[in-house]
Length: 378
Image (cartoon, rainbow, N blue to C red; front, top):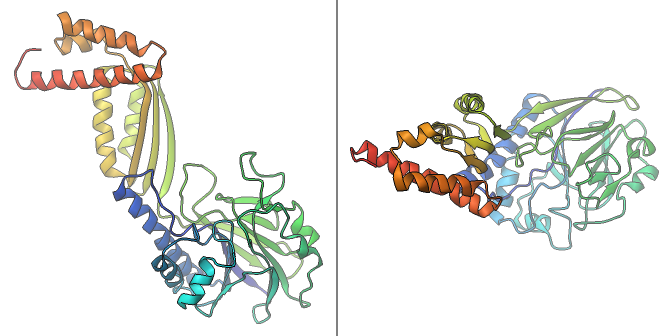
């Protein structure tokens, strides 16, 4: 027998992007719906037998009714079974986003929302799902422990579906609640364990994978923005797992240190080639002269219109006017003394004063240039 499933998780539908400007925040939130539609179309195109969604379909219990309806409408492109469990963001509480969805009549018959720990068999497709939904946001018990003793019909593939952190393999800063045993796939005789909770793609062992979120929402290089194709041949044989990129936007984080003047040119070239689908967090430190800062600001202005979003933190970048800068601005006498004082203040060691001095230097340089361009003498 052969079976192909698509494994995805952590959609976080209804997520808000408060750190972004409103024009970007709305677009990034909307992209999550477009990506789910793309996942559905991909599942149909590539011949998936079923789609597994390993928790956190919704970002919160309080998402709007419209968001609930739009999520299930986005599944229309794939007519086969969707098998979902709640995660920590949308846990199956007595009153939850899932009970609201049922009352709204928004859940299609082909969408199987497993709100209780149980075995759900799909004999026509040749597999059984052992589901470990979260019924509260956090637990310190391994909700997959019962998999070990669960019985399934002979000849069916055993697929686990869970949401939490595999013990001992994730980064130390990952929440330790909702633990999952490291060897659960082996101890429960699973052919595959589909996991959600960690937003990047990660292989735990040959039969245990995190798919990650299909649409980026963090500035981390952790394999996000993908879904997993899982192909089975027969029970007992490890599946073939193949990642596929589906994200509409790519989130990038650049850390740039400008130690010497020549460091600026490579940064400007990178900014020049930003693609429209990029969401960029740029942190710049080091030092730059006035002429270089003018070039940088011009490049950033162009880049803002070129990519989806650009957030730049230059608070650690010291503006160091050269003698040539000062001469070009005709800032002699009192103005020259002010510039010298501001340069010294930047190196005072007080972060707030240094930032104020840097901003004052930029403002003074702009004012002086405007006066020069208007024909006045500084």
